[in-house]
Image 1 (cartoon, rainbow, N blue to C red):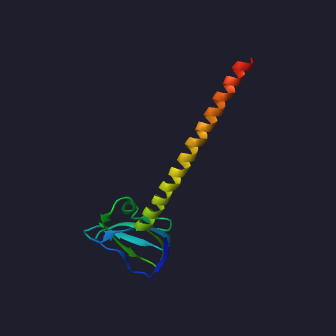
Image 2: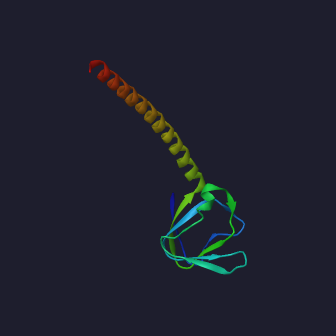
Image 3: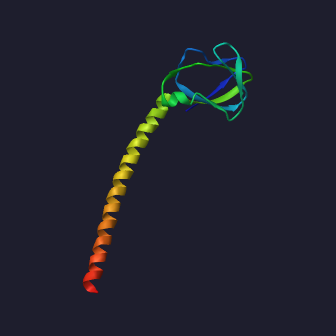
Length: 120
């Protein structure tokens, strides 16, 4: 994740570019235009844009320009994929340990119920 500051009237994302990051607006205003050049939205602080590209590569179908000076967080698709890969490995280890723990507890439970039947 990268922090970035852009001045007013700065192009952030252009039509036809490969979408490769999610933008989180922390301060300032962003204007979103469609392919006809029509303003279709004004993003305010805490807004996000481009999250779909994190899941699937795509081509930018919007133009995003700063209205005022802005402060952004940029989350690159490559970084998200690295984190997802690490999470997958962590989940695999946790799952393996959970299964082993569950089998141990089941074995102990079975052993306890057999010893109660024998002694009683």
